[in-house]
Amino acid sequence: MGETKCRYCTTRNLALFAGLDEGDLRRVHQPIKEVALAQQDALYRMNERGSALFTLRSGVMKLMQYLPDGSQRIVRLLRDSDALGLETLVGQPYQHDAIALTDCMICVIPVEVVDLLGREQPRLYRELMTRWQQALSEADVWLTEFTTGTARQRVARLLLRLACPEGGNHLPLFGREDIGAMVGLTTETVSRTIAELRRQGLLRDRGANIHECNREMLRRIADGEE
Image (cartoon, rainbow, N blue to C red; front, side, top):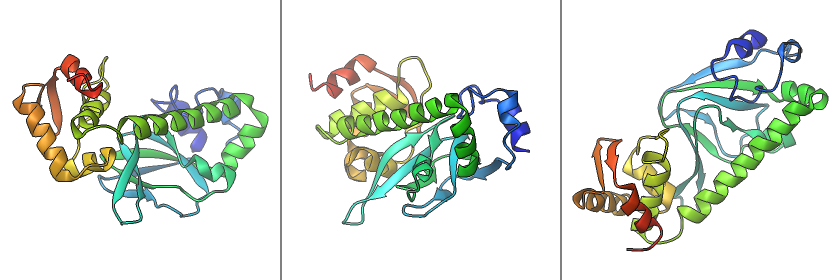
């Protein structure tokens, strides 16, 4: 079952097993399960010990941690083809809460499958290292871009990266509470900042969807030039 699903997966060219051929996949004896999550469902919780890692086939998930005062911080968003739970490969518990922001389809990959193929297939090992580096780079971006500067700068940077990116592939803004958890601001501050940007004509939205934004002005705000 695992082999068949991987072979015909529509996102296989982007997923963890992208570099494996048919012979490699036939070595997967354990089934790779498919899990559907509804919005706000948890895939796993921080400090849980698991025996699987995951590939996100569709949807958007958030990785959350909690501060000593009990407040939450979103440290990364994941979308189609992203891998998560890689820490299980080195025997560590999950480092975050993984929560669905939208309906999600997920492939559950037993660690034993990756260990087997990783020992014998350098291509998979290289792909794992690439995914780990991507995760580290993304974490650096969230740390440097979304937790420093004024409220206007943080929100402008988030808009440019998620809702108004160059070349499409945009994401909805989600709830104001989630946005606040991404940029380290209160829900009230986020709502006030977005409302101000809207009044200035820098973005037009309908609910969580951005229909138009002034990228040039948002970039100036993000860079502290206004």
